[in-house]
Amino acid sequence: METRAARPAAVAEAAARRVRRSAPPGAAGRLMIIAADHPARGALRAGADPLAMGDRAGLLERMCAALARPGVDGVLGTPDVIEDLLLLGALDGKVVLGSMNRGGLAGASFEIDDRFTAYTAQAIAAGGLDGGKMLLRIDLDDPATARTLEACAHAVTGLAGHGLMAMVEPFISTRGSGGAVRNLLTPEAMITAVSIASGLGATSAHTWLKVPVVDRMEEVMAASALPALLLGGEVPADPDAALAGWQKALALPSVRGLVVGRTLLYPPDDDVAGAVDAAVGLL
Image 1 (cartoon, rainbow, N blue to C red):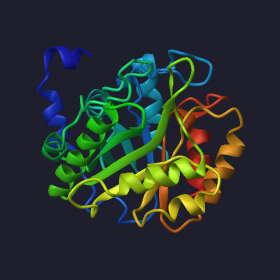
Image 2 (cartoon, rainbow, N blue to C red):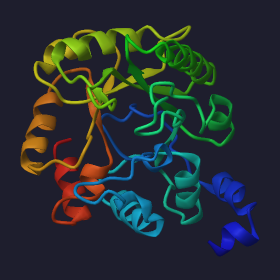
Image 3 (cartoon, rainbow, N blue to C red):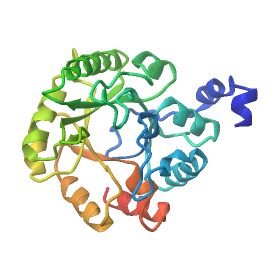
């Protein structure tokens, strides 16, 4: 905190010093990425604690513990989180992916209108990051979906222009009776979402998918030839069942690893190292 207040230029200096991997993400095989881009969208809940991710010092401590474990390749985060980790010297040799659209705030009436309020493709390239991630929730009853689709397509094109990974996290979404947005996690919905996401942008040469584990994953993954990473989602009541689901899906040829946040950072037993090691063991 003192550094941020007294020497804001230290962020750029730390970014310039960061030791980068020589090969692009995915070139060395499976990827294990720790995600922490939830707070910028106002999604702070982990397990039973509605404000778990609202404690930045606690989040960074957990992130550093996870990143230090063998087999962890990198991190996904918004600029504030990435810069905190840069200042802590935790990102040398790591894959760093910038989260781009965080404007669809959790619970907002405009949630589907997921504006790009964090990284841009240009900033990701200038900062020496390895790629960008975008959330694409498709609600056929919400006209704001069109704006999000268009913005994601531009981001895919922009990142590809710099030769950087564009990670798209697609869902078919709907609003329930209470107005809350929920993602449809049926095989049919995910097949549709994957198909739409795969066609975004002027080229898909650098596009990866970030997908949940659902039933009939082999059919979901057959909807696209793009590489994919599995997401973690909410902290599961049964961590062993979550591990089993990941393990089964990782056997599919297009699945190249995991992007997991709260499930590993806030496990039920609070053993971050143990949770991360168990996930890495699947790879």
